[in-house]
Amino acid sequence: MSTVEARLANLVGVSQKDKGAAYTDLLKQLVAESKPSAGDILKVVNHVVLEDHVGLVVARQVLTELLKALQTDAFKSDLELQKNIIESTLETLQPRVVSYEEVAQALRLQLADLLENEEEWSEAARVLMGLTMDSGRLSNDEEKLRVYVRIVRLLLEDEDSVQAETYQNRAGLLIHSTQDRELQLSYKLCSARISDYHRKFVEAAMRYQELSYAGDLDEQERLHILSASVTCAVLAPAGPNRSRVLASLCRDERTAQLPNYTILSKMFLEHILRPNEVKGFEQTLKPHQLAKIAQSSNDKLASAGGTSMNEDSLEADGESISTRTGPSTVLDRAVMEHNLLSCTKIYNNITFLGLGTLLDLTPAAAETMARKMIEQGRLRASIDQVKRLITFEARDDEEAQGKAGGLGDVDQETEDTGGYFTKKWDHNIRRTAANVETIVQSLHEKGLLSHSTAMTS
Image 1 (tube, one colour):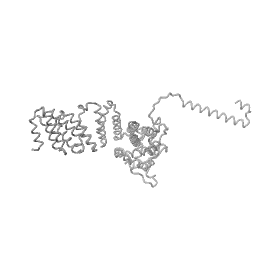
Image 2 (tube, one colour; image 1 turned 90 degrees about the vertical axis):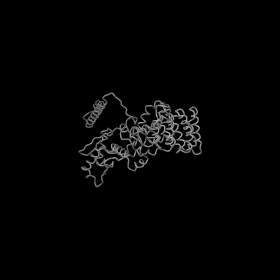
Image 3 (cartoon, helix red, strand yellow; image 1 turned 135 degrees about the vertical axis):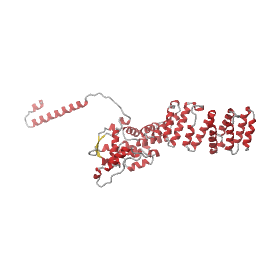
Image 4 (tube, one colour; image 1 turned 120 degrees about the vertical axis):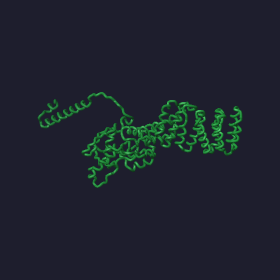
């Protein structure tokens, strides 16, 4: 029998009122050793928790002492020892966790801190998920919110946006319960990042931009968040919604300091982007923003079918036609759709072959992209499949930049004053008066009218 087991056996006969002090003293002695033994400490923990004669009150006293000991320098200098003791203690408490909820919660929070410091994000989140939210210190809504936001942040570090959204939704029900500015900003940042991961880029860009104005954040942090907003705006699907965001960002003087300002301004001005301009921007993207996208089966059939029967290939004048049937990444799609919209400022119409050459797609794939944008209301154009021609409808500048200078849709009901017919009437009067003047001048030159008669006329 080991020394610790022998000492525990000797304490069995101690009176109940002295057991608390006796077991606590034993634990203190083990912790105070130059090299504390995890095995010896865990023997004491298992004994007080599992042996019925020890009693619940005594067990809680010993576990409380253990919590204090884990905060001492002896354990903080040996993180592996600390983690081992906490994990084993939680495993021991699990069958009886209802009786030791507060201790279990404190141990889980300590373990989460350790794992987070070691950058084991998912493991730290999993530990926090095991917390009982309706008891102990977490009965307060604000504390629950703090834990939920922390879980979301940890999951996003490992790019688990699906599970993160579940806890973000729970946090959303409690966000009203806090006035803590730091916690509110953390929640908003998590919301923006989740939108980013789920490729809701317009929504993410607006949320990032809103956060970039927060005075509580450091200037560099705000610029970093603004840069994330610009990135999401560039990746957003081309159309009026993105144009509004681009306009708002271009009006922000701070964006001129950012490395991705060039591509932002070119997209805002609807200039066609070249591959070499996109390549530098691509290097700044995060892995989830470079994820491959899959084509729908209908799009594949349309592109493949169009390619095999494409008569426009005879007009290529010896130039090779692209074999790409669609964008491969989110960035690819964003740039192609942007370039397609930019065409409307240069051309009145364009053939499928010409558009395919510009977008580096097969003619059929270019037609498919244009068709989808027309269906979604992001492109005003018509397609003539017989002539294999796309005709763009005229856009006014206000609509091209997303209406109201990029501030949003403004629905105004104006009274019909018949202005069109009034202008037409005025134009007819001016034209008639000019014709009469021409006739009078002609008659006067031929001497058919005297000067006084002309003046009277």
